[in-house]
Image 1 (cartoon, rainbow, N blue to C red):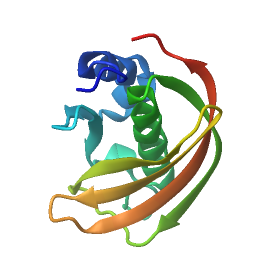
Image 2: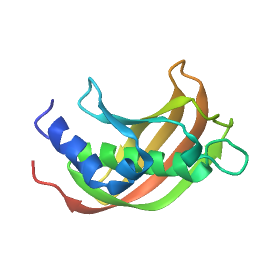
Image 3: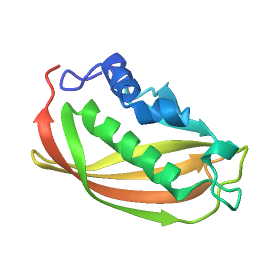
Length: 139
């Protein structure tokens, strides 16, 4: 991993320190590029009254994954704005994961996108967000 990035262990700990991951029972999975992704087996506890995944779970997973991507770049951020495009319902029993990418890595503003996919690459939702950098993190 490049010298200007935090270790993967610190990023994984950052995700575990974010108690929403544990609340959702989301798995934090290391990636080959040094980052992480969130994975979730959708259960009834994650569903809305139509027995499909609640949109709030999707946006929470994406927000957390994009925050972790920013943390990989040694920055603590808060969300300024986030737009979610829900394309397909996620049924109970489906395993989904995040695919967060940084589009702009500025000193004060970071812009990210995140897909919510299944193992076949089927895209359920696409999320774009702007983050404000509140602090740089020491390596």
